[in-house]
Amino acid sequence: MMLFGNIYRREEYCGKKLNKTTQNHEGIHYCQALDFVKGNEKLRVLGFLIFYILYFIEWLIKLIFAIFTFGKVKAYYSISFEQEAYLNERKYTYQDTRKRFAWCKYIFKLIV
Image (cartoon, rainbow, N blue to C red; front, side, top):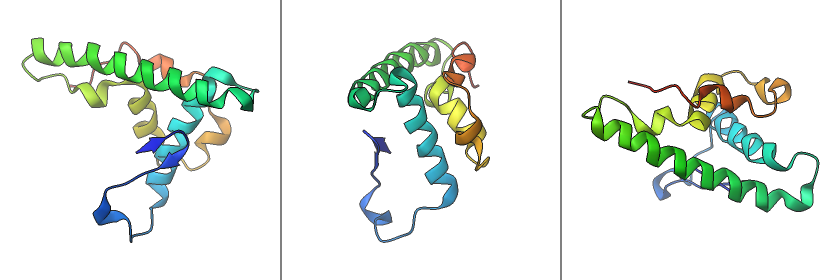
């Protein structure tokens, strides 16, 4: 889990090295948060706050879809930020080439 640019993990994984795919996945989330304040490092915390607020709101909306489709929609995997990260976590140069707000193209997609 990435919080304000730092990666946190469960206790049982603390002694193990973080694999490249997970580092890239969390790095994509870092880039997503910076989308909101591109070019202004002083406002980086604000970018993370906006990211987390939007993440939570989208999760709630997609959770409602999951409830009304009897769990057919997977709320967590339907979050646009997660879709972008999961689809590109094995593309190790993706962060260098990704376009700002690339996650937006996944907003209306639901994972079933």
